Image 1 (cartoon, helix red, strand yellow):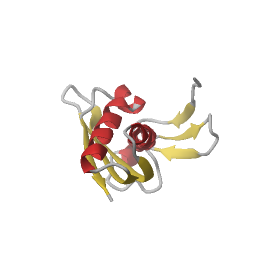
Image 2 (cartoon, rainbow, N blue to C red; image 1 turned 180 degrees about the horizontal axis):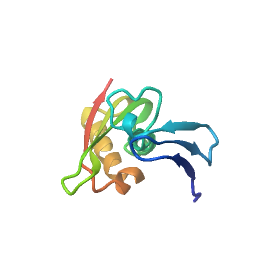
Image 3 (cartoon, one colour; image 1 turned 120 degrees about the vertical axis):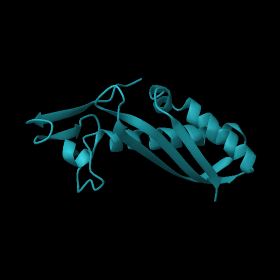
Image 4 (cartoon, one colour; image 1 turned 135 degrees about the vertical axis):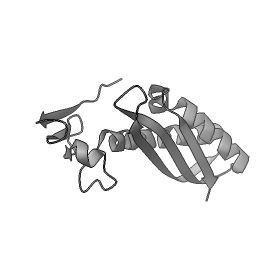
Length: 145
């Protein structure tokens, strides 16, 4: 299996500096990061580690769920997956990811709500990104369209 690479070039202090995150493997883009914007409600055109984790988690989860729906005898027509990743203070100092909420609405043929919920929970547990984030509380809201 492949290894994927991202690179960050950072200049300056935490509060006054900024950086650029390059998605090196895919070459799809370079994105600005800064701590003040990371900690602000309005990202104002910059990304953050939390947003990048949310992107990784939502896409990984969608892939895993599509596989489990098919294994359960269903056919996924569409899956709309959102991952909300929260940053907050760490009681031991600094910051930490305080939680992740996955929300999925699926249009699925051949599975009822109970079957979809079972596949959704299985995807939450089996997605490689979920496995990597076992130290974070991950909640799931799943529904059929």
